[in-house]
Structures are given as structure tokens and as C-alpha cells.
Length: 412
Ligand SMILES: Nc1ncnc2c1ncn2[C@@H]1O[C@H](COP(=O)(O)OP(=O)(O)OP(=O)(O)O)[C@@H](O)[C@H]1O
Ligand SMILES: [Mg+2]
Image (cartoon, helix red, strand yellow):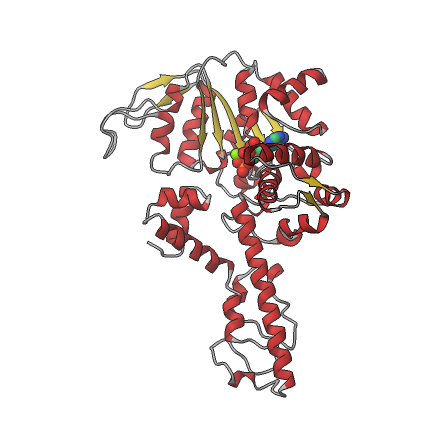
């Protein structure tokens, strides 16, 4: 494909950026579109994977057929087979009528399986069968049905790791991954960051009827150097925040910095899910991480002030008498409250700090990640009157993850 043709595709699908890796990904999508090969789109959260299955569908002979996007992580395990493959009337309690299912509906079209790594193993087996023979069986039926569906899948988790952990079928992985398309993270796209910022700033200026925000030279450098753990989604959100909040439309590096979560958030564990390699699923996670970081800093500061005051009063060594909790120690031995051990070592206060004086307040301020998470889930459930679907949406996690967490924290 010529550069001009790729440029045309970018324009049509609203894709900004000139990085070679991004153009190559678009080129592969266009080349593979007319075939019926399965395509697996990989890339960190927020890199822009969602445009690709649409490009593939639009440039294929199926473009007049159905395009169905399914978020595999959002459908509860109990109903996913019926949603994908349909069910017969009376197949299970509540199956009042029959259902065609997406694979039946999309006959002659394309199905985009987003977050494919979230599919339960039995569904993976059914999917493999459709991919290999175009055959599937509705839930509660014994009749084999045929469908002609093109599959494009996407994931932001490392599927090879999921295979190693027995959560994803290897044969299905190879079948889906016939043509891999990798979308590069934003931090590897150089000046594209700046182009994207300009585009988003212009869009938000129009949306909010205000002049577009501009960056000083220093701010521009800062923007390009920032690692963007939440990728384009994060950049878009930050540009929107600045567009709304800052009355002075010229943004300096110092101002910009106040909007960028501290860079060491990258070391923090993702709060939801156990897939550490996955990075941040949403701005919410980034915010949690920043919040957590701030808690740590506040705790450290309080501790310092506390120690200084105690020193002044000549009370060092006797603080155990000031506050008494089971985790408080009165000695100068290295001491970290039990609760802190629940936190990843990288975010723990240094254990070899001889002069740590644990106080009740300090313990409170250093709530473990688990507790923050539990509290967020409890509050979301409360807000949505126990409706798990809405709470999961609010928390930006899959319903299945929410079910698991509710069990884990005994919130039901
Ligand atoms: N190159 C781009 N040009 C313009 N907008 C983009 C680009 N890439 C991503 N975006 C925008 O960034 C946001 C996030 O993109 P998208 O939803 O496709 O991410 P994703 O890769 O599917 O992430 P996740 O794995 O979390 O689902 C969207 O609003 C999208 O329009
Ligand atoms: Mg997505």
C-alpha cells in the first residue's frame, strides 16, 4: 500500500500518528482484510486496538454483512455460551424463547472478540470448533449449525502467559493468531504524542467552545518524554481535563506535570486482575495508583513530623505509651506494621529504617491495596444498590472479575 492510501485509511477511521509501526499495523490490516484469516490484535490498554477490526471488516467482502463487537470480559460466565452460540427454548431456567446467538446473527459478517483472554475454557472449546469447521451447537440443542463468520480478536493481556497458567488454550491461540497485528504503546511513538495532543486539544476546544490549549516548548518535551502507562486513552483524558480546568490556555511544563501521575506508578501493581504485564486497564486504575502513592507520602510525612516532635520532647523510644495498638512497637527494632506486608515490596516503606515509630495513624494511612480495592467495590455496590452489572461498569472491571472479588472479600 502506498503512503497516501494508508493516510486515507487513517483519515477515514480517525487514526492520528505517523509512527512507522502504526502505519505498518494499518497496512497489515488492509492486506489481510479480503481474506478470511483470523486476526489477533495485541497491544497495551488504550493504544487504539478498537479501530482495527472495523478497518478489517470495512475492507473485506463482508462489509455489507453484520459487524458484531463482543466484549468477552463483560458477559457473565453463565450466559456467555448462550450469547455467543444461542440457545433453544427451555435450554435452562429463564430461557423462555430461543436465541440465535452472535455466531448465528453474524453469518456472512465479522465478529470482533474483544478481551478474548477472558473467555472461559469451555467457551474456548466451542470457539475453536467454529474456527476450525464453521460449526457450532446452540446451548440445549444437539443440532450442528453452520456459520460463515470472520473472527478478529483483541487482547491487552499476555496470552502466552495465560497459556502457561492454563487459562487459555494453546491450540485456540494459534488458530486466532493466524495474522498477528501489534499496536505499539504510545511511549514508543515519539512525536505522535504531540500530534495526538493537538488533535484532542482542538476537539475539546470545539466541544467546550473555548480556545484550544497550547503547550510551551518545555511542556511539549515533557509530554513526549512521559511514559503514558494508559496510552492514548490517558492522553485524551488528560487533554480534556486540562482543557476544562486551566483558564490560562498556555500550558507550561510545571502545569502539565500536575496532571501527569507520578512516573513511578508504573512500578505499582495493577489493582484489578492478576495480570501484572497488562499495565493499567483504565484511568480509574491509574487514579487508584496515584491515590495509593499519595497515601504513602502523607503517611511518611506524618511519621516524620511525629518523630520530629517526639524528638523535641525527648520522648523518642517511649512512643508506645502514646498510642497502643497490637502492631505498635516500642523498640528501635526494624518494624513494619503487619498490614504493610500485604503490599508489594516495591511500595513498602523501607524495612531497614531503624527509626520507624509506628503509630495508629500511620497504620491507618497505609491501608493495603486490598483494603482500598475492597472499599471501592463495597462503595460501588452500595451506589448501585447491589446491582453487580452496573457496579462492574462503574469500576471498569469485568463482571466476572467483580464476582470473583466479591467472593474473595466476602462482600456478598
Ligand atoms: N491513533 C489514534 N488516533 C486517535 N485516537 C486514538 C488513537 N488511538 C487511540 N485513540 C483513542 O483512544 C481511546 C482508546 O482507544 P481504544 O478504545 O481503541 O483502546 P484499546 O486498545 O481498545 O484499549 P483496551 O485494551 O483498554 O480496550 C479511544 O477513545 C480512541 O478513539
Ligand atoms: Mg478496547
